[in-house]
Length: 498
Image (tube, rainbow, N blue to C red; front, side, top):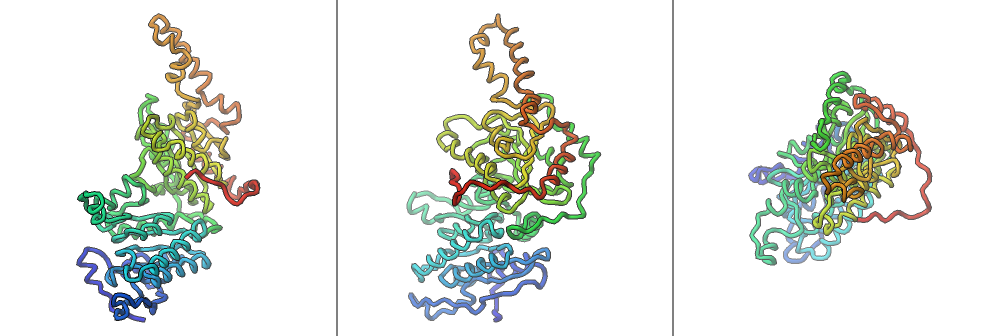
């Protein structure tokens, strides 16, 4: 069925119309609408006199990068894109068909929320949608684009999905809007400050990608779909056109580590020297920046990259970075994407703030996620790996298949200064014992912190030079390509510390 779309009304707000969004996202002329004849059945509050085309949401299927996808886009020009029972059922059925047809689901959210006139039927529509979101999780990728308001119960469908894309100046995502905040808390706040793209990309961690505009957003979605399997069990096919400048990268990686061990550096420099040229696609780049996660290619095949970033807070793990790492690890494991972890971590962030926020619970998520993951796991320790954080960051003890360490790596319960502060507390306070303290400090570094000790105990697979990292990683992933994990103990599922 054909309708006259109210395109200009969206353009007046600086936004694309729902059908324009779908066409910008999908390959040219590949989208086919379904359920266009659907209509609401509500008769309350004058709704029986309203004809709401396609019940305010365009649903269908098409192709992106030549591969099939299911897509829906809420149309704000039709009853404010509000969600009623039929609207929710349309999306829920689309997701169910995507599960059966094994293809990703992409939702473009632009809605005023629940259709108040429909009462509990609108809530039924949301419930049906949430249920299918959960059914799809781990079966097919789910991507949410926030291209307008998304409030109340509407936020929980995107919240269940795998990746959320927010767009500057048009994305709004919150449980209760500014008017409710004003009435309940007597607080004046704008929609942008409450739940705009920057808020959710930098502070809350709800959004995985922040985009400058809609076209930028759709380009990023298309790029993401080039890195991830389109359904559970799909083989990751290598891109035959991969490039890697071996000589240039080998030289550069040797120069990354600062001479001063307490000085920070950007771990992305190491990542770029190991993965295929220009292939690293970072996820949640603005949130919890002491950790870096994202997708990359190694010899044309996708890998999930996780790394501590010493450039921010020394690479310490805190509540937010722990959540960021754990969620990304679990996504990769869900879709059989190998894990490549770079470790330079002095520990978990100490102090009452983190303890009261639950660093124990959040940090435990990292341990759980890595231990649970059955995909190929390769770890590279570049510098510091101390205490519980060493264990958590995909050590051999949590099931890493191969752990490589650079010659200057430090693996211990804690650094020399902290250790001597406990073992030789009295001597450190006595200036006359300075020589002894210096001697013991060097002894600690030579006999305990060195990666040789870990290698002797089989905790480190091999000590390698930085310039050997690319080759080691590539060959290790090749060796592990068809890895099969031993059968897990009998159980329904584990209980991750959420």
